[in-house]
Image 1: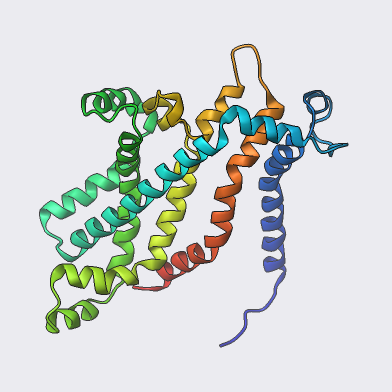
Image 2 (image 1 turned 180 degrees about the vertical axis):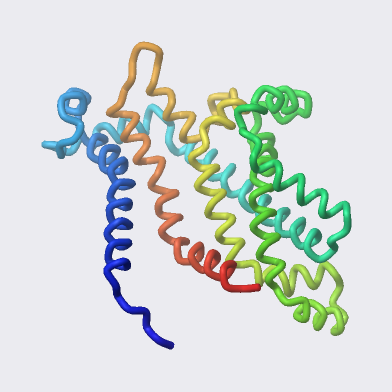
Length: 277
């Protein structure tokens, strides 16, 4: 296989990519650097490095947020919602792809159309429906809402990937006497690992950092997620930026570790989806 030549165009694209990467890292710089400063130093010069590390910001933020509690809530919601979205979306997409009748085609069209509906336009009806259905102010109710909002994009991604799986693999399993469910769980589901990891990773980033949906559904202080708890540092007349930035650093550490651990799989998923078919 011939190795592509390193041209000026390639060099220019690499420079642009590096500059864009540095641009995205600027926000991380401000958050991390200022989380170690006193409030006065933060207001005086937010761009400079801290003269001394204020670990007390993290200790106070940990206590005020009751961080173990909000971390547990965020973990429970993210893990359960993610697994449910991935599992149900994979099954739904498999059915739609392998049985393309009018009903399944219509349902797929509905799911695709749902992706373009702005969340802000359905906030009020969502709260009313959640109260009527007994989903308001509970982690279970919030997970159900996340499944509903996460399913369209996940089904769309699984749908495209399943179409690239050769039917001959499943037909061989059927000839060997495997049932429909057995074919899905034993043959198809393992093949969905690359796109499944991609779906889980994208939904994890969204659910972990989401503020608006928990703000609408959860009212009990003991059920707060990390973004909701961090919001307590911002009142009508006071804004505790030093503690809020320390809380943000504490909150992003778990999801950054998860993203770095799984980034290889998301690249594999995108690559597999682009070359099959």
